[in-house]
Amino acid sequence: MRCPFCSFNEDKVIDSRTAKDSSVIRRRRECLSCNRRFNTFERVEINLPMIIKRDSSRVAYDRHKVESGIRKACEKRAVSQEQIEELLNELEQKLLEHGEKEVPVAVVGEHVMAALKNLDEVAYIRFASVYRQFKDISEFMQELQGLLKQNSSHPPA
Image 1 (cartoon, helix red, strand yellow):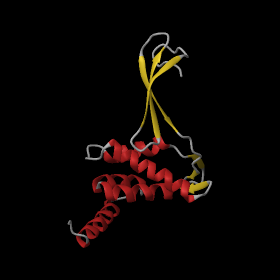
Image 2: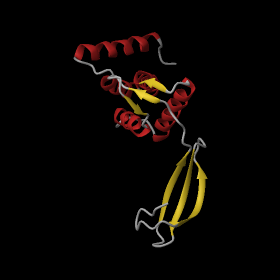
Image 3: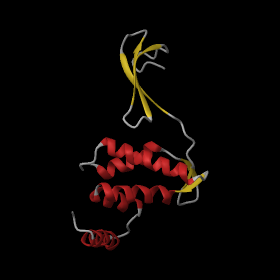
Image 4: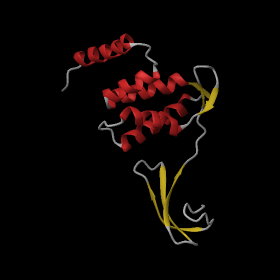
């Protein structure tokens, strides 16, 4: 591992711990040259399917890109990093269970929207407005009205 401070290529691992969901290992390292400490995170590399975009082009699934969109939707909302990580892990599990080598972007978008709808309705509307590319306020209002109808048919417990 290259030191982020001095770029030296040798270090020693001081501590290793698994994350809460056991999918990530956090390693505390110390550079053997400058003696500064830093963290690294190891995740099992899984071959997720290629994503078929709306224009029919294919791109590799990018966790960071999906996470960025979710973070923007959840900005200034009561959604924790752990909840976002859980949502991403569930999405990747669904993509693996899908069993295909290529998956339409709609599968990703719809899963994220469904998860956000249960997590935070404002984040859901924010994400949906970008994902569904609302052309005008009437499309936005239709989505809000659908959400309001759903909430009125399921009053809070």
